[in-house]
Image (tube, rainbow, N blue to C red; front, side, top):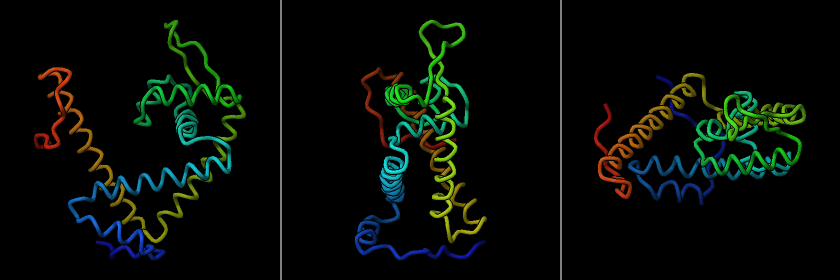
Length: 187
């Protein structure tokens, strides 16, 4: 087993106070806090460096990775509301970074893809994001990075199971059924 992770930087007193105010039973809340910090940091960098929003970047990043996709496909990949993807895609299209084309077999659906300018921008931003992510994981060896990734996947799998169980309960009880915060144990 690898050694304990030593922070590359010392947390501020403010961060340490917030962090320590929750016990180990609140680790998922800490994950939410880190996610919000990461979103805020990335949002500022994207706005300053490229003049785009985080929602626009999510669309660009997924189009760059997946190729032409529908709003529904992009929303599913990013785990966001399709309306957010639709707004971001319209903004990217208005700026010449994305283009919509007909979806085969459907008059209503459209496929979104990056223009050449959008692909160039996505490539540049992707390289900057990879460098930033490397900075965030600095001080973790490959074993620790893999363990961290495995732990995140564990939490994501539990969330997925919770959502599936909650949806099934809602269908049984009716659309207005409240989701329980204590689902049945995972298989």
